[in-house]
Image (cartoon, rainbow, N blue to C red; front, side, top):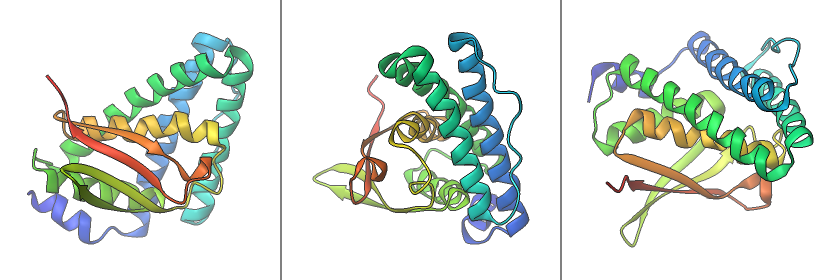
Length: 197
């Protein structure tokens, strides 16, 4: 485990949390903008500026995502919008994961992945635990600051970015959400597995 990863997992000052949230918001919003431009031929005039405390910034980001997802669904229909949106968000997440891996010197150990996910989810206001159920690794999100702002449709699409981040951090791992708070579940549940070759 790298010293950068260890330090970041123990302490991140507020200005770094804000800077990293701004980075995530910009990249995910740009990914949705690109999908709108390519498939829906609609352009959102400008990206929203995040300001205020972390909760306010997360709320602004979520509303920006909701707006773009709604347009994508109106233009393409639900099924096609979800497919295109999830593909776009997975790619954005994958690049964010690779960036995080480089910045923090993350190795291939599962503990490194777990610590890195903890850092990224702290930025997003998400609390989770990892459980091993009958040989299956399960991530359970019991608190998500974004769940009160995201529409169910936006959450389905944006959660693909989380799945991409995991793959970007560790090419050997795959994550897939099975339950979401935004769809009425008490917790979000995702399975984490080794990639089948």
